[in-house]
Length: 267
Image (cartoon, rainbow, N blue to C red; front, side, top):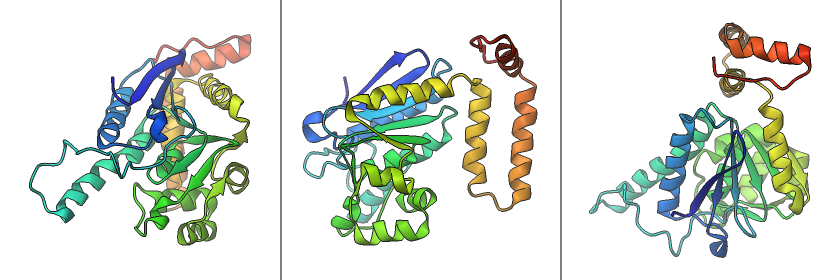
């Protein structure tokens, strides 16, 4: 068993739990590869409607384990420092890209410290819920390095360019209540209600058809950077055309009229 647990707490929800609680779930090279493997597998698992990412113990993720990360087995021996770093960063960059590319929405449930590489992973989710204990720490700034894993792309799209500049240039931490206020997370909840609230959100998503959810997510991801309103409308029109031709869309309408739970078949 690796350091990431995978289970189905309710039907349709795949929960991935970073599971090195004694190290505040700091990431080893093996964990990066393991997380990528899980995300790639989930992408083609039609039983999974929503992905829930969380951390075991007192924190979500303290970032890269600078003392015990091990060796990346995807990097060949004998590379110079620059080439080694390039290979590593290319691999790590796959994580937010995969999270955004999944047809299933990704919900991140964050408690305690979220630092370094854990920070962009948390905000790469489609929706992030924070426990009141959550603390977002810009460890890149504290380490005197640049940012990674799309952090400088993701952050301003959540909090705005000026707020992102302040957080990235000063490196100050953000506590859960402020994170909710500035839009860094969807909402802030009590620690003992974190998983319950995350699962409620997943259930609210799953009343919609899988194709409708996938097309809505892809439209959001495309249109946040759409070159024009016309391009955004064209993307939406194509999504509507595709979804309207499915049996699941007809089933959703029928279930709404008949006041019952829809039975989706992926058709």
